Length: 184
Image (tube, rainbow, N blue to C red; front, top):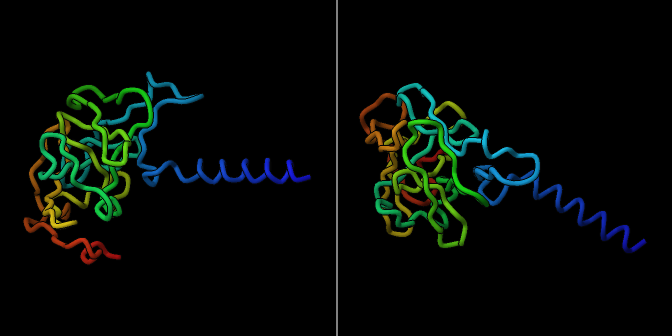
């Protein structure tokens, strides 16, 4: 009986972990594993989004961003920063991009995970976005004494330059790491 309970607990725990979508709140771009064809699953694709144009998106359709502070593949957004800006990670294999999406690569994060980069820029999704909607372009915030300006990544892998907060305005939203300004 004890063995049956232990087996049942292990199965339930495995199902709960699988439902979570990985350590990045479903932002993992895992294209390896049973039943997944890496030839068809794109880690990064190009999509036309309102107010920002043709940009790079993750598999789930959310816009991809990179902060100006992390130029040269230096990871600075960690800890509380990752509550709002989710690193696009890959647990195995190489990242695959749609044609014209720039050169994809990988960089090791401080926690040991492998983050996808485009033209050397680490890629993130924004917690306030939804598939097909980019609201973080030009967003400015601060975490751990570091000042970030976030830019959506254009179809060719270049930053678009903060054209406001995705609302067509010219003034980027600004907040500090306390959660203010994020709607929480």
